[in-house]
Length: 99
Image (cartoon, rainbow, N blue to C red; front, top):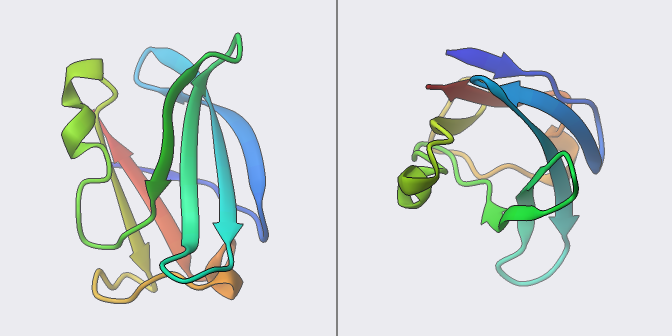
């Protein structure tokens, strides 16, 4: 497993997931059933997946296995039972990717 480095607040950055590079965008939606969401795009800006909610304790890419992106997991302070809050980004929220 590889930890994806995160900073505080909403963000976007390029990162290698396996042998391909992607742009990850993390944004917070302050609404009922809101929270942190992830968009994944190719480097040329084409959307690959949009609006993945960061839910702890599940493979966030499970339903997208046909894309060959691997597996992605979110934890807050190493726990998979807590839902990430705005202040957790860059501090207590961790994302881990594996092939």
